Length: 556
Image (cartoon, rainbow, N blue to C red; front, side, top):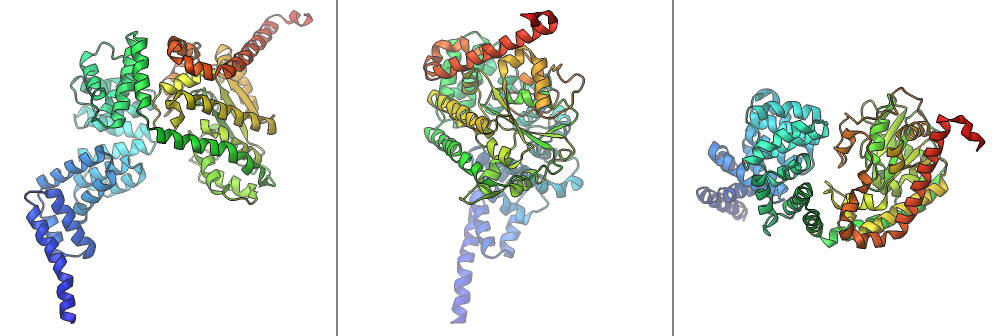
């Protein structure tokens, strides 16, 4: 009986080993996966390990190409599983490590990608694929200056593929080096060597209206129903920008409508359900925060909130010029606390809330007087922070309803903001946001400052000085003279903030007014209310300016 058990245990492994050996010549990925199944059952199986170690460089390259194809179809975990079988037997192969790092980046695990590459940095310092993968992982980890420094020499040596070129251009754009970003992408685009994501990013950097060969590439993707949905979205957005540059407003809007129509209704429904739930539950959670503690030596948190495209990035970049200000960027800290501490129905300890918020601050942030936390959707949650942290403040950025709605409709956000793809949800999201902020303003009237975009751009100096005072910052020379930002900016506003403060951007939607009539009708009350408020702001600003120029006007 014991002998039979041993025979049965060996049988399936022997069959799998024979099957894998037979597959090597006609189905290499199938063979590798079969050897992987053997190793799952018997990690030290000598025959399987020997076969995998015996694969040629050409065979391993073939597997990497298959894995790359899997990643491009959205199957990065499957690609990693396949390459990982080879890596188990060939742990020192730099090409496998370089691929796996890229797959981890696609899976939004850049730190894991850097860890995967770490053992090879000293042993293979000149390996171009390793260096390119390291540069890409560094970019996705947030260090765009280091990424650009690592990738640019490889580009000059002709050692970057389409994906790495796109990452380099994106890092340069985030750093404000927009002309360099364009020059990274334009030559390979003319040669047909860019992916659709690269062509899309190029359309955001450059006027392609006089580039027929590039336009033809984008049109081919747009017309291909079998192309991945993300590629078709990017193609439609790129063509909208090109048609606008060509003066074809009708064609531009048609492509915008097509791009947004590709977003699945289910994704939009799920997103809106989550926003409605936050709008309903956050005030209830705020009421459960007990015994707010006194400030405890941390920087003063200032939450910059509002509708997407309402000027939140501009407000952040203006204040970042102050020497005593640091920023978390688009932080999800508040949402994380809401999802953990605020679950259930019991009291919420303010000290625990504060501790969770200030845990693991980035370097340099703890020494600042003011810590900016810019996340537009925190409009639904900022009242919790105001309740738990008495020193916290909120800047509520506002802009003409049609300007924010159309700007969101014409932008392809990297992630989130799924309300922006339909007119009905754009209008509903506007009302949800404004209603949430009206509630918080009622509860914390002295700790929320509205920052309307049009008055800010009409007379920047008094608004900037007022924002600084509201945040508790001492005056600094030059703070009110904002002429654009040189800081790293990763949001959809990265180009606008380089230009400084300029007027007229809130009027761009008017060129598309005939197509936006249904949206305008849905927002008519909000539009009227905002326009009256804005006129009052500007009238007060003008009166104050006149008074400053001629004090005798006080008699009037």
